[in-house]
Image (tube, rainbow, N blue to C red; front, side):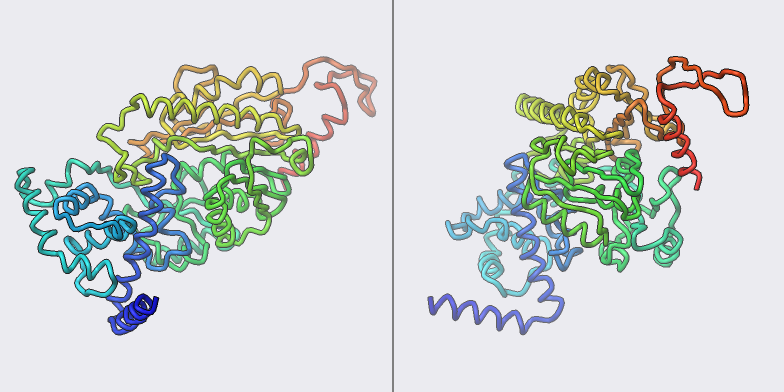
Length: 492
């Protein structure tokens, strides 16, 4: 114990003697190892806690840029690193328990900037650096590769760069001020579809920008922003986000509602609840109540769920539409072409079964008027097939499909009734593949305050000041007055 304590004290002393840059690199390697461990464990279980980016850019990570670079580069070279360590035959049981740190430091020793021998992992690998380099040279010879780029090419799958999208958090900053501030850094333009979304050149690095760090803007893809906008909740409503973490869509709902009303943010996974709470704090939203629990076990008939008027359902999915954005092509489970083999098909079937249950449950809430079902998947089984399975139930409950963003070109696959009302984004053309279905109660007035559908039974009504009879659509005068009051509200 004394030896261990003395060693730890000596290591701390060595760290204090490092330059600022060296100290920053030392801690970045530790932060990168934590992220890498989480990513690899999630990949092995096929249940990721978050994407590489969402994990790196969480508030708990200090040196985001260096950590992100280390994680990405280590993942790109992971097959090579594992082979080198195996061939060098230097890893004992102690280091097998810390392989995430070992992978990070091996990358930095062979291909990066790790030169100082501070830290046990650094000392160990620098001591064996000749063996590592020899193993690398032998691997290059065996593979007949002229360099590292050729050696890693087989494991890499690139994608055309997409613009940097930034959603302005209107709870903290107006759009004009955001454009002015970001315009000092680079070219900025408004998105033609979403008024709170800004477009910056591809590759613009904003991770250390003050507006990002203080929650005034969120780096969020266009398709992701379209989901909350499609739900279109009104200020004052009770809204339920069924599978809420990491929370970007949740806080977008809060901004759309001007922080009025109430948002119930439901999340089952405890670790993801922490991430959700961090996002909410960053956004400054005060109308969000987090529920750590299973959406499927919520009882729609009890308070406050019997007051819910809109539900955003963005359930667990394959993530196939955002594999490039999530950097899934860097993970060990990824194979070229990413075809759905037997294991993948079974996984998709399991996901689809859950998605159908969740959508069925969402439609059962007694006061709900609008339900958005969305995925970041390109697979029909998670999208159109799920919608098709609930259409009879939806119709019996008074719901119909409505068209979100009518000006959007790409629509659903022609395998379901109402495919033209479903929305898809294309992973090639739009750089990410999302799916959105919007269910609306038939009697609800949402477009310019006018009811979509009312009973056409004719009822005789006397009009004040006239002896003539006229036809009034609907069964109750109070119902008509309700819609007229809605029209007045919408125009003020």
